[in-house]
Image (cartoon, rainbow, N blue to C red; front, side, top):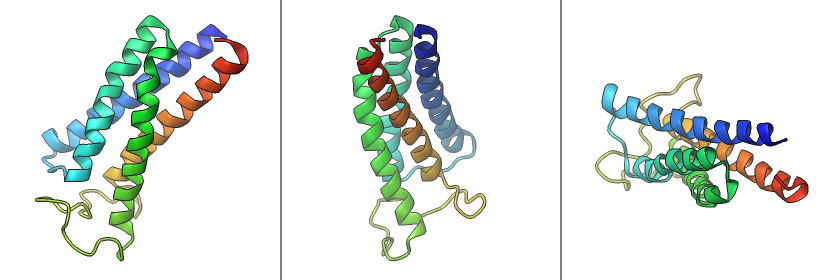
Length: 141
């Protein structure tokens, strides 16, 4: 059971790492300027690499409780940001700052945008973390 726990913890860390590297690729390599909501999502995602990395290193899920909170907040921000992009009634102006939050640098298959990718990562992290808490409570990991 402990090996399974470590695998899930590794998946949490790997998801946050891929999301972090992906956001840096979009901004630093492709030159996409992040909007204000993108910055909030980055502020919540980047520390997750360290939080889950430390929890994986120490093999202690208790260290990662801030990750659950940050991924939950990040998930809500991503959902809101994605809604601004895809629901025209919500994006009634450029109220987000220098870069409009409804701008879509990528739009794969008509629905995959940068906030969609970030939201997917936050949702994966949040759900796995909740599952691990449930397993810990019921099986004593």
